Length: 448
Image: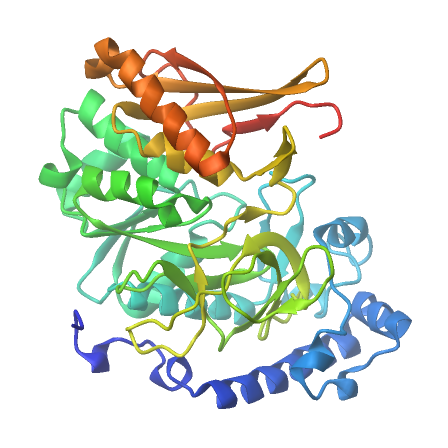
């Protein structure tokens, strides 16, 4: 049964319920338009397409789109800081039209600079409006954003998207975690946005340093996460929802792409792709074949239809995703990906001959309630053998249950990863804490 009236479900009822055939026609039209824009205004894109012997007029079908060359982050790094400085010849507008600067976090290498025009920034807010409206944000909400407002895009666009919906937005900028929690309590904020790591960290700080129970002493009803896959990992989502007494929703975006996917209030075990603003294709990692059927993993190649300053056209994101086999009960015709982003092609690695996704370790650890939220994984080489060390924290009240907890954790790890680990227990609060993106998985093997 629907949780809310159908008329109140959609930010853009026309696009979000467009029949699939018409949606495909629109996507082809919009792809051809953004490709022509880049071909006409970007020396980088013109070279790329001319070298491949393809031009915008050749695009008539989805199959034609699959022939368009992909762009990788390394290519973007290679041109930046050249003329026009600092973006290079991928830029499609005069420098004086750039009104926003952001850069990637640099977690996968040298940061990439991202210029946006004011029109692009309005597009960012529009993409976030889809997300927040689908998750129940309305004009009556007071949204507290505990984010450092730095050069990473993170929740900048979430801030503007919430304002576009008419929400009252409270920026948590330079406040520390304790001050942020107290301000949430003082103002009776109803919603917040952060990485899963920081959501769990705030709950821990509230309990241990302020004597507050977020589920009882704060007014938060909904939480939107980004930056990490945790909000799509059932055990991590459960921890957050229980700690805050609130609904936790996932969203996926990236600085060089935009906010392209979101979980709606139905929470169907997957996230909608915003197919009105983006084209997502899933490509077989080995063959390059475009995957249309559900439940088959591949890497995402994505196009943002309406971003003009530095277009995102057939961008190889390295994100591993899977099409969902079902439609969502919410009524949106946008396809869903199952369980969010499974991992990154460059994060999923072979250990002892087994493909390992770090998200599987997170799901196992967070599924043991006697363990704390933090953990650390270290992959090394001992002779010719891979070795995996896993550090975990015990909840203070669980000190006498180590053997039972160890057995339970080993069972979960074998089930979810088919690997054995050297597990060590550490005092609660002793492992590193993170405010934004966590770095819990470290592969120190020389060939990795």
